[in-house]
Image (tube, rainbow, N blue to C red):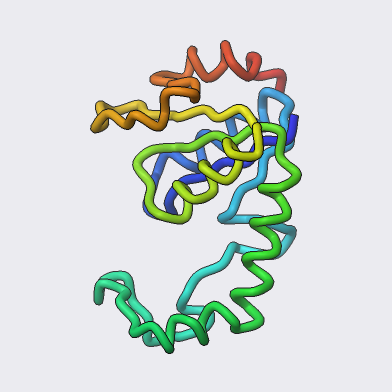
Length: 148
């Protein structure tokens, strides 16, 4: 199965979920390594002065220009292509706006959605149609047991 894992760069659990799903025999898209030799998109590739620590806030015109930069366009194309091609989406909490947009896009396209939340989280009504996964055993029950 083709699986898109949506999460945050700051989520330390994301790489483990990608690895576990791959070991279960699935083709898994990893935004941190979307293609051979590609370590994923980051705003500092476009604007070295951009900084999350500095709250990452940019004025609207600068933001529009950043989104049109060839590096941003290429990063978006990798992500959106994988999102359109996936058969299921796994949303690994905690995460932010991009992952939430991706999850909603995939669910709206009729793809099954899975929410991984290994720690207590604030309830979210819109997860009603998703499968909530709270530990690795539940992940393996949904996606099969590791084969390699």
